[in-house]
Length: 299
Length: 299
Image 1: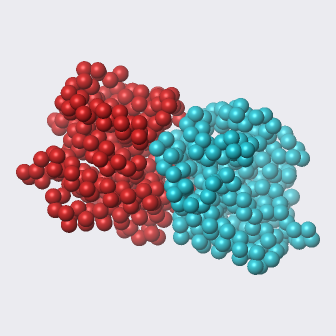
Image 2 (image 1 turned 90 degrees about the horizontal axis):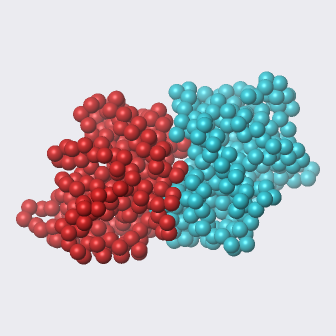
Image 3 (image 1 turned 45 degrees about the vertical axis):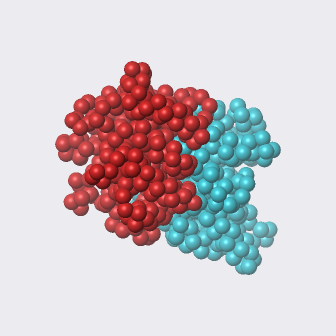
């Protein structure tokens, strides 16, 4: 259902080389072989971030959030790490055990970081920081971490920024691979503003443990074309019902069709960020996501 | 729709007055009412279902994971008999393959039997289970099926339970450090009767000691015994016929209703063992499981 004109437009903008990269990477490490669209698998999920107001003010704990998933009747939760009380194994194992007993799956965790530092020492620090979170991910028994690309420093070019991201992500992925953990860079403005940049980063990192957290909303323009480009590399998603800035409505049915056509297999994860109170707003977005997963998923 | 008669009959047969109060204790401790109000029944399949093909080398564990995409189930259970090795690189490769295909691991299953009269051999069994816990950790799963085992000739049931507890307790202490629950399977021998399993779990007294509820192996009063174990179950094995000597068809609808009533939250995993070739038989059993999960699950 993708608008061909948009797709062509994107490829022209990105430059002709991007197209062949895309094909190469799909062949080498794309998530799906054979008839990709035969069995799309959409599992329902929600980020802790969706309840950020409540978690930040202490009105909700991570344990409460895991229990909330039972009430929301979704498959999985994504552990936004900002509100973890600690990274002590005892605490992380207690969260893992709580989720296990409730039949709630972890889709992954999400950390706050930047891969885009001009300073080599800062890049090394970032790698060390990510390693700690890889260890925490192992303790939680899940297999992916959302990482951010980060802001391009003032005066630097996209090309320089991409170099720095690659230099940071590559050694981090080497470490994560040893633990069975994938690092999924989020489409989140800045250096990851354009799908073509994300594809180039992944091609150059060249690790099966480097992937994309496809936030469907963080685009200035051409959301559908950019989403379609990145679906083959996506191992997680962030779902909202608008894109921007400025905020414009996003046709979620069209988004699901794009994912289905590419045979996406993974979580469709609500990351609520509207103005309505999260207690009433999150369930509404979750209902939309559940209806679409039911419509398009093979499971 | 269990009858009061079945239940009474079971309790009398078990000759174990404490059984009902033990059930009440653990149920009250582990399952708050607001959580059990929403049953979560996730579809799954054990590798054992394809044992004929895995044994003959006509199917690898990689093939089995990919088969789950075709079968359109949420999770797969990794019966360890056909793992090529316990090497991290191999296990991480399986974990990554499943992750990329949006396949969840419901757990792993080893063949260790705990009912061992010799103290030295029991110590070796604790070590052996520990090695499988390490495998579970590398796969990123939170559940490991273990067996009770056959009662040696001349030994009493009371002695058998003592030996199982002596193995399972230290094994659970180790598993707890890795976030892995040991699920003792209801599987003949010392685990023929629900009351004995409940007593074992009560004496092991660990949040990481639970039951892998195989619904087919009870010598009498199967529905009452299944119902007694649901509060302790973190995993199931589903077939549509009881085991010998009374291989009657199982009223799966009745079984699902009991799991709903017990507030079960976890996988309903096909463990196919009928005479028909698994290639055609497994999908038929899964079709029944999928219909029932769709009907009764909140997710």
